[in-house]
Length: 152
Image (cartoon, rainbow, N blue to C red; front, side, top):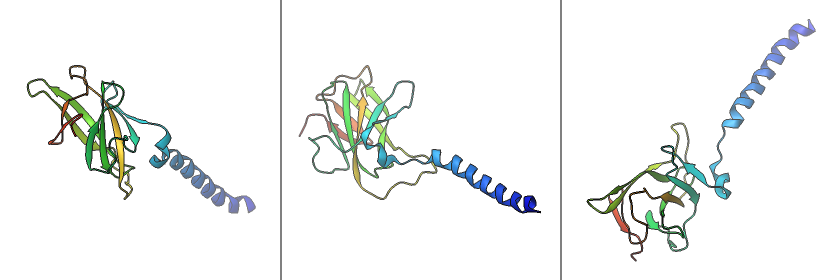
């Protein structure tokens, strides 16, 4: 009789342990990723690397800004929004006729993910398409807003 009474209890403990084992690895604490960059891959070549914060020349929190770093083939795209689900570049194409780099942003979030209700700057280090000129003095169109890199 003891083994019959213990069987349901063992089954419940086993089910709980299995549930914990399946759930814990799926947890995603993006706030802990501040020390390492996350990469966004939309095709075999990475489009951008995302990191928290903004570069020093973007001092005031603004909804959207562009900047450069030491690499002339990089464009820094700074967004403001949820730190756990930032807006990141998902496409970047050079329009030769218009002489403009067209960038599309989307939230970096999965369908079942809940975003934090905070407001933080996030920088995406965008690798320029091969046919685009270097970032200095580049005209950039991001979701219908135009920026000229290096212009004040």
